[in-house]
Image 1: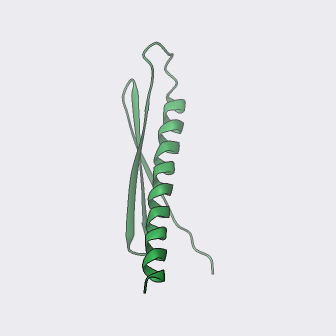
Image 2 (image 1 turned 180 degrees about the horizontal axis):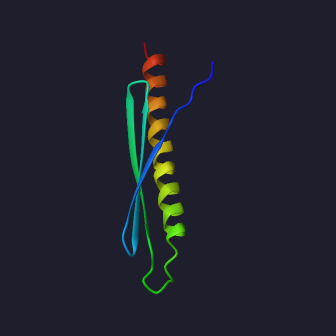
Length: 80
């Protein structure tokens, strides 16, 4: 069996801050996580770096949320 699962990423940016929101719907569970990157005002603007950092941080947080949910389900299963 194969399955495609999509993670949606949304970016909001201004001159110094990028916020990425990652969302995933998986078999009735909904996950949402945010990642933020801020540019030092003394640094040259390079939006791609802020986007990459914000996305990576959102995905990292999403990973933790999914792992926590999986561990909770395992714990509930083992305590039956």
